[in-house]
Amino acid sequence: MTVVLRRVNRTVLALVGLVLVVGGGAVLAAALDLSVPSWWPWSGPDDVLLSRSERQHWRAESWWWPVVIALLGLIVLLTLWWLVVQFRRARLREVLVDSGDGEEAVLRGRALETVLEADATAQEGVARARVALTGRRTAPRTRVALLLEAYASPADALTTLSDQALAHARSSTGLPALPTEARLRAVKHRARRVA
Image (spheres, one colour):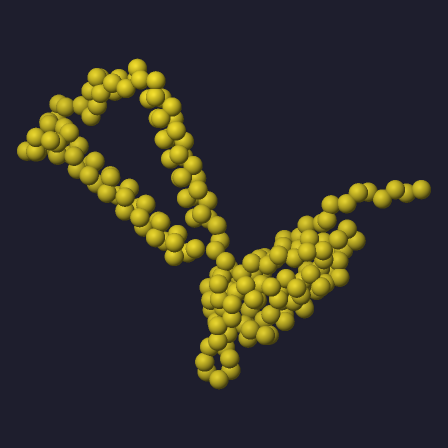
């Protein structure tokens, strides 16, 4: 995903840059009254970017406004998608683990996530756990979302998560630290009746 995102970013930035350079160059050449080819859109400093007839040429056509609105809507949607993708944290695919013999082994990120989820879900009072690895291969970070049962204590759940699941992950991977962001939510339940 990161490689694809980089390619999309570079392509979009290259296209936008090209359009801006060509458009700006055309306007600048006309404004400075440089000798421009006959097909150039603007011929001199007194020329306007869009004449009145060009601005009003398509207004009478029934398809004009729906097409303009659809194109502008598509541009807005693509821009919003691109913006959301920029801030989305990509999951870590692999973690480098010191094997103890001077070499490094590669651990699949999804495998470590699965083990952490299983350890966290096995805790008392945890209904479900979701784990995502982020960061770099040599310095991973975790985001843990715990869904707690109604009777569970959040402080106890965090302590157990830190002392058991995360400590086990740190020791098995040989990482000196495993920074973690934990989010806790309670299971929705009905209030109990008191007789």
